[in-house]
Length: 424
Ligand code: 0X9
Ligand code: ZN
Image 1 (cartoon, rainbow, N blue to C red):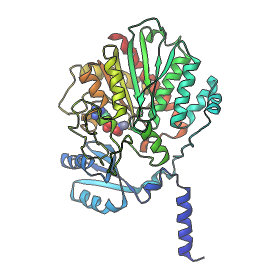
Image 2 (cartoon, protein in one colour):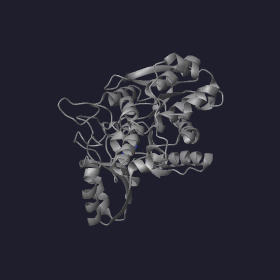
Image 3 (cartoon, helix red, strand yellow):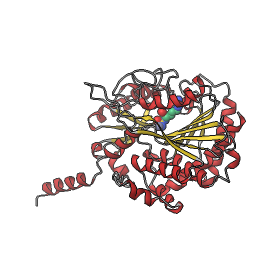
Image 4 (tube, rainbow, N blue to C red):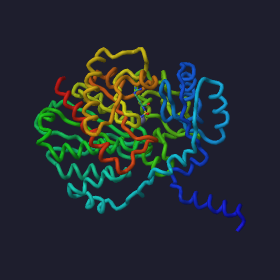
C-alpha cells in the first residue's frame, strides 16, 4: 500500500475509534495563556462574551485556558502575540487521549439497573462510573424506595426537551412542619459530570447513616437537585463532551442553548453574560426564561423563608465562592461570616487527602459574571448562606478511579456547610 493510503486508513480508524461526543473536536487546540496585565485579561473577558469561536474553560486574572477551532487558531495566535501574553497550545484530542472519556450507553432496562444497585454494597458501584440521566433518576427512586420514612422523590418540573428535573427531599422527622431547608443543586452546566455524583453521594451517605447525622437533621430538610440541566448533560454524553448550556432552541436560529448560570434574576445580563444566542454565556431572552431556571426559582421562592443554605455545585477549579459574583466592587453585608464558613468547609475538604480549595468571590478570583444562582439566592431571596462550589477535575474530567475520593472529600465540605444551617 502507498504510504498516503496507509495514512488515510489510519486517520479513518482513528475517527471510527473516537467517541461520538469528541468527533467534533478534531483539529481543535487547547491554549494555556499566561499574562500579568489588566489589558490582556480585559481582552480575553471581551472574547468570552462576544466571540463565539473561543471557548473558555478557565478564565483567571493571570491565566486562562481556551479551546479554539482550527479556522480561528492563526488569528487568535496573532492577537495574543500583539498582547503581553505568553501561550502554549496543544491538540485537544492529544491532551485528552490519555484520559478515559468513555461514556456508557443509555440503558433502557430500568429494572436491571434497579437490581444492580439494590444492596448498599452495590450502590457503591454507582460511584465508579458516570451515569446517564435515566440511571440517575433510577438511583434516586431506589433511594426513596429504600428509605420511605426519610426520603421523598419528586420532580421540580421539566427541561426544554421534556426531561424531569428530579429532586430528593431528605429529612429525619416528617412530623416537624416548618423545617429549615438546605438546598443543594448540581449539573447546571452539562459538561461538569462530577457535580451530580457528589450530590447523589451526599444523599446516599446521609440516608445510609441517619443516626450519625441526626444532630444536623433535627429540624433540617436537605433538598437535593443533582441534575438541573439534564438536556445539556445528555448532550455532553452523546454529541459534544464540552457542552455547557441547556438545549433551548429558537425557531429559525442555528445556535442552541442558554447558560443556566446567567439566567437568574440578579443583575441579569449585565457582566460576564451575553445577549448573543451563540455565546457560551448567553443569558437567555429574559430572567428565568428557561424552564430549568424557573423550576429552581419556583421552589426557592416558595420556600424562601425556610431555606437557610443554598449550594450550587460546579466544576472545575477547587473554589468555594460566595456572593457577589456579578461585580468586583459589590460586597455582601455578611461577607466576613460567609468567608469564615467557606474557609471552614475548605479545611474540612483538605483534611481528607489534602485537596486545597481557594475561598472568595468569583468576581475577585475569576471573573465578574451576573445572573448566577448564588447571587440570586442571597441577594433576591435573602437566603443567608449561598455558595458555589467548583470541584476538582482538569479538562472537566475526573478520572473514574478518582470519583469516590472527590465524592468523599466534597461530602466533608457539604457537612461542614450544613452544620451551619441551624444558626439561622
Ligand atoms: O461561570 C460560572 O457560571 C461558574 N463557573 S463555571 O466554570 N462552572 O462555569 C462560576 C459562577 C460563580 N457565581 C457567579 N458569578 N455568580
Ligand atoms: Zn459550571
